[in-house]
Image (cartoon, rainbow, N blue to C red; front, side, top):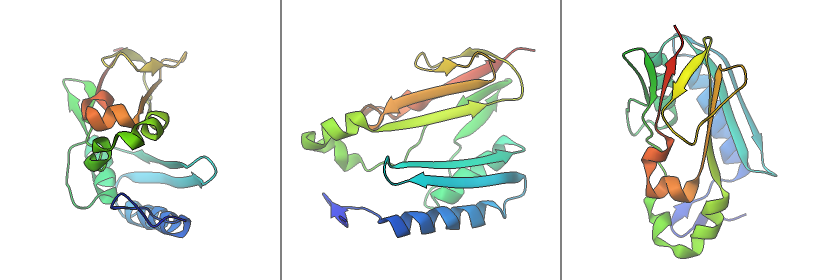
Length: 160
């Protein structure tokens, strides 16, 4: 019901649905992207974007389609390692208001990476590796990420 909180525009449900549909349409035009799906749950405020990609360049292009203001390298291959370079466009003015801290400590950013080969090692100590050794899970609360964007960085190496 709110349109703005502390000068930050809050999208309504229709705006969020529209943005997700727009993202699906734009991402589907990027060569090398397939199986695009989005979902939302307005009871828990969980929004998901899922897709398959054929290269890290393609993955970066899709993520840059979400935030067109910045063209960033979000992921790269560094000597055979999959690297995540975190760069979330979160409003920095939120950390200036201690009243928001409690809520932001409860909200999370979650990254789930699934690979077609076994993971040998993950650099981020907060990562969890699945029993199958093909999926890496990383979750951080938004308050900490706002204060240190590098908390979502990760370097993942694979078994030969």
